[in-house]
Length: 105
Image (cartoon, rainbow, N blue to C red; front, top):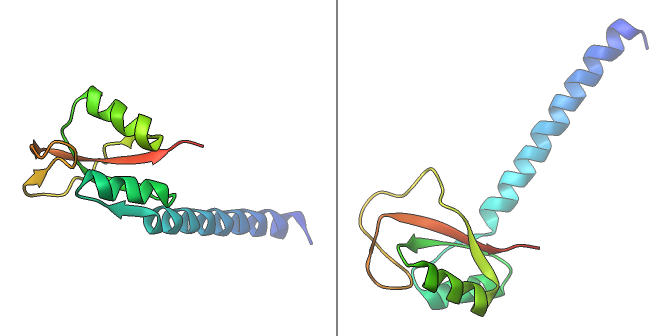
């Protein structure tokens, strides 16, 4: 295959491979996030190897309790937050945002 044909072919294949890998990663992520509204639901999701997404307004003390009891910590506060009233899964107080909890491996 000539260089003038090979280079564009390889570039197109790399773009195709990257898009495929991104699609697989997004699918994996989305299929492993469980929406939770209580601490018991969070513990169950983490014990199944899933990521738990739920309303959070608790203190560092409660976050440490989650870590000690489940091995999970807050991974992030997603940029895209659900609208409407939320209740903290730990304290029952009003929550302004959701957090994603997971174990690190």
